Length: 165
Ligand code: NI
Picture 1 (cartoon, rainbow, N blue to C red):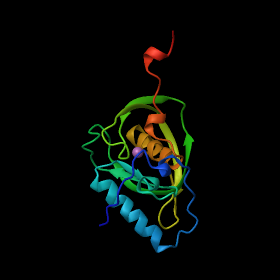
Picture 2: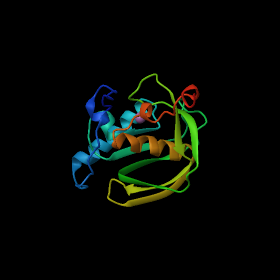
Picture 3: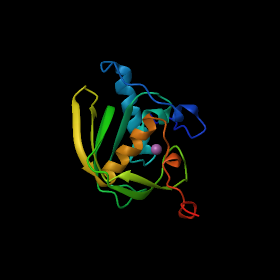
């Protein structure tokens, strides 16, 4: 088991757009993904993106049976998603509280699409396509944001008092 250090907000890597994975045959890729899963599970996260451990590649892992951090979340199968793409299934959005392992202690109300279709590749290069809703859709949108350098602080709606004068 190799738990890596999770970098926080002040590191520029978390604000960059990560690169696509080109080489699916490398041992390094398998080790990286294993470390990502170990690091996510050790820290009790629902998901983790490679930039959070300082690696600028478009890889996310997510999945849990039950979460102490999000007790209402339905279980999601442990998934490795490389070079993910997201498609909208609905324009309906849902606001819910989110945290992030890269922003220890912070919680933000974040609006996410209620249902999405995601696709990408597993560690063997096999294609994954799923349509999901609920926390599953939320966690994938959260982790996907990390690949584009977007943190939950950038997704927060304006406070009500600032919406109109
Ligand atoms: Ni996060």
